[in-house]
Each structure stands twice: as structure tokens, then as C-alpha cells.
Amino acid sequence: MSEPDPDEPATRGGQTRAVILDTALRLFEEQGYERTTMRAIAAEAGVSVGNAYYYFDSKEQLIQAFYDLNGERQVVASGPAMEGSRDLAVRLRSVLRTWVEINAGNHEFAGSFFKHAADPRSPLSPFSRESVPAREAVTEIFRSVVAGSDVKVPPVLRAELPNLLWLYQMGIVLFWVHDRSPGTAKTYELIDRTVPLVVRAIGLARFRVMRGLLDDTLELIASLSGNSLTGRA
Amino acid sequence: MSEPDPDEPATRGGQTRAVILDTALRLFEEQGYERTTMRAIAAEAGVSVGNAYYYFDSKEQLIQAFYDLNGERQVVASGPAMEGSRDLAVRLRSVLRTWVEINAGNHEFAGSFFKHAADPRSPLSPFSRESVPAREAVTEIFRSVVAGSDVKVPPVLRAELPNLLWLYQMGIVLFWVHDRSPGTAKTYELIDRTVPLVVRAIGLARFRVMRGLLDDTLELIASLSGNSLTGRA
DNA sequence: GTCTATAACACGATAGAC
DNA sequence: GTCTATCGTGTTATAGAC
Image (cartoon, rainbow over all chains, first blue to last red; front, top):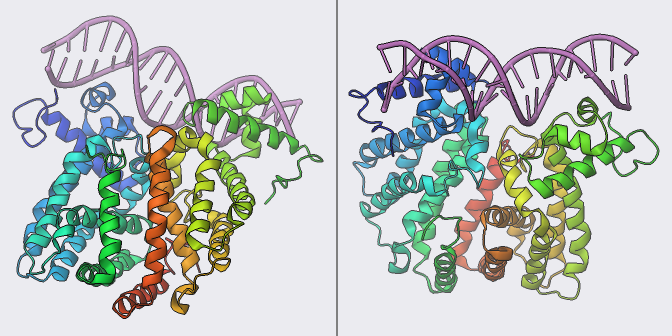
């Protein structure tokens, strides 16, 4: 609350905040998260250790700032990425590949801090309260992916589909973090090959044999969303 | 490799190892992982810190030992849990609930070290090389769940199904770690309500509309399993 | 409010003596 | 195999300067 708007660092001394963050992210990418010390960040940013802790409560909080930055980047880049096609598969594939491209330089870095994001207690968890705004912004992308396409989504599925696609992206990210193929080629392959499956699965929702299963699944999701897993009310 | 067999600690000085491990797991359960220091473990076990590190390369490795212990417990308990029914849903539900019951006392503990297991670089990752034996032992349980049931699994699905059920259990575990409902009641509910869905989904594999999707999915799994994600050859 | 400098603390981990 | 001493790290504390 007391921290200045990260988008407007020009005015305040909160410009310092931006310098510290930029330096930290650069060092994280160069050396990995664990091997980058707070002392090194402060020294490289030209500030004291105490000052770094004045703007960031902990080292982990630097990752939180990275998250927010990254979410914004995906939102910004996804608009153009979706343009030019109303085909759901094309749009979905494009948005997912964009995410991977944006994060190409962060693969090492991501691997080294992923553990913190997986901690259910950590604010870094994608399911945490702190991550709600970022998650909803990204979910909004997927709502737009569907809304701008020419597929008719069965009404029962309409409300929940963006959330499910967000979860689908989480799965892609999980794979990507573990992916050691050159240029994370396997992740691109995973996207290219699962997107048609997902689209086809959505189409199957119309069939009678599927409907019972689908209805029960959606009801289950609704029933359990009070859980802290989703962070939803 | 140089460490003594943990099942036969009587003979060697490696009995020390057992004392250290027992003490560590007790303290972990009492105080959580992070708040239990190596100094405390060593002191409580009546050895020096250096000696603790002689038997365990790191604090994390104490968790690895816990994993192995836990896997064994599930294997032992699952046999009786499955007895008495050839209904796949009953058997599956029973095995999954057994896992939750076994780990009821470790819920806090599990939450506190889950982050380490999620680190793709960590040997604690369920996808790591080090976890292959434990994972295969548990997968074997699910093979037995299916084999002892009266359902006819479509041939295409037969080979991969145990692996998919293991992945399903990982999903349950992920939910459980985040579950803060009293007695992890929500997790039990999740099991009770997803098991029928899973069983029904397996049944759907016979329908024509599903087959294309299923075949492509299985082919994809086969194609990507060279990835480090699964650790399979 | 923003920032520095320095010291100190607790912890995981290591080195090297015995 | 076991110990004591020590290091490097995240983090906090202090005491102040602009």
C-alpha cells in the first residue's frame, strides 16, 4: 500500500525501487536465483542492503514483482498475437506460444525459483490471495481467446472455460519448467499437439454421452471452489 | 551408494543414521520443516551437526528418506485396502483414501516441504531420476487396482492407464497440500466425487467419438515421454 | 520519507583435526 | 565416524544523514 506505483517511477524516489528490481531480475537471469545474493543486488544497483530491504520485504518479493511484470507483458503481447484469426485453435496456440516466447530468457531463472511458487504457503503460489489480480488478468486473456473465436461454447461450459484454460496454461508452464530440450522445443510441440485436442474436447461437450460427465465435473468444480486451492470466494 | 541399508541398521554404526532420521522426522512433524534446524536435529539425536551431515548430504535429503518410508507404507496398506471388491471405483477410492489417511499426521509437514518437491532441479521432484523407484512402486499399486477389477480396459489404454492414475493421484496430492478444510474433508470429497468420473471416463474410451481424441492423446504421451518431465527412458 | 554504513544473528553447509 | 570451528547467506538492528 505504501509503495509507489511501479508504473510511474519517475517522480518519487521510488525510482530506486525500479533500479533495484531491474538489477535483481538481470542478476537472476545471469546467475540464477539462489546464487544471486541480496548483497550483490544492492551493490550492483548502487544502494545499500538496508535500502533494498526498505523497498522489498524479502528476496522472494522480488519474484512477486517479476510475476506482475510478466503478467502485464503477456496481456500486452496477447492482443496482437490473437489478431487475424477467429479460429479457436489458432488463437489459443498463439497465446500459449507467446507466453513461452516472452519467457524464453527466463527459463533458467524460472527453474531456480519455481520451488517458491509451488509452496502453498507462499504468496508466490499462483493459487494465493496475492496472485488473484495477476491470475484474473491472465484469465481475462483466455476469455477473450474464446469470445473472439467462432466456436459456439455450450452454455454450461461458458463461465468456467476461461478458468479451465488458465489451468491448462499452468500445465504447460509446469512442463516447460521441466523441459530441457534445446529451445524448449518439446514445450512448443506440446502446445501444438494439445491445442487441437483441447479444442476437440470442447466440441465433444455437445454430445449426449459426454454431457453427464461434463455436468458432474462442472458441478464438482463449483462445489469445491470455496477451497483455498483456487483462492476464490 | 556408500550409505548402509536403511532396513538393517542394527549391525553398522549406521544405526546412528536411523537415530538421526527418526529424530528429524519427529521434529519435522512437531514443528514443521523450515523451523526445524539441523542444529536442533543433531542436538536432539545426541550427535554433532557435522555427523548429521556425514549421513545426510543435506537437509532436503532427510525428506527423500521420508518419501521412501511413505511409499513403502502406501504399498503395504494398499493391498488390504483393495481387498473385498472387484469394483474399480471402490478399489480406486480405497487406495486414494488410504494415502490421505496415512499422511493425515503429515499435513502440516507436507505443506512446509512441498516447495522442495516442486523444484524441477531437486531430487525430491516426483519426476526426478531419484524418484523413479518410488514412483514405479506406487504405479504398480494402480496397475493392481485395475488388474484386480472387473472392468475391461480398452487395449489402447491398458499400458498407460496406471501411469495416468499415478498422475491423477499427484493431482489429489496437490489439492490435499492446499486443502485447509478441517480433517482435509474437501480432499476426501474430491476423491469420492472424481473417482466415479474417472471410471466413467475410462468407460467412454469405447465410444467412437472419443476414440480419435484418445488415440491422439496417447500417441502424444508416448511421443513426449522422452522428456525429463517423466524421467522415463 | 529515503538512504547509508556497519554490525549482528540464525541457519545450512563445509573444512579439517582427531 | 565424529567432533569443533568457521564460512556464506538471508535477514534484522542500530544509529544516524539528508
